[in-house]
Image 1 (tube, rainbow, N blue to C red):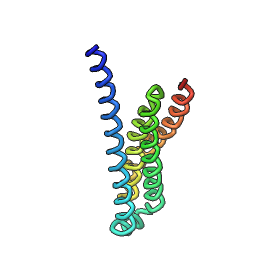
Image 2: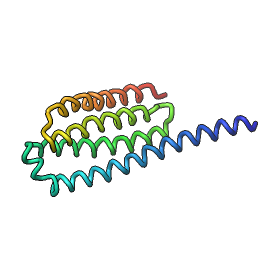
Image 3: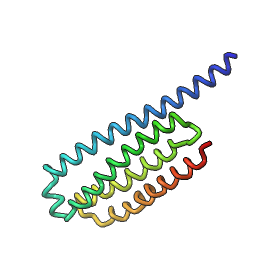
Image 4: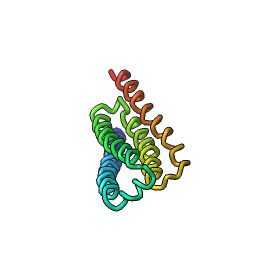
Length: 141
């Protein structure tokens, strides 16, 4: 009987650790999004104008915001319906948003063309994450 309780406790700890990781990550990303927006509006504004990067910067910031909220929702959904494995979708969104928004913000600030070559990989990952969500939702019983 003791063994069964240990297994249940380990599963519960694993779930708590996963939720804690994504909650902390989402909080940091939201803080970062606000900070990046503030810096873009004030400190980096002339740099963004110099490299014609205002639109790219705004797009990167918007996508970061939207997908951080999405990750938060997915992790809470995964906690309620673990068989859906929605944390996989959240993980793919985390990697993809770092590639997409990260490269786009750096490109907007520096004008370095090679950074814009990374952005489509992140965008493709984001699109794939939404298709993965459809697939995982259809697999639920």
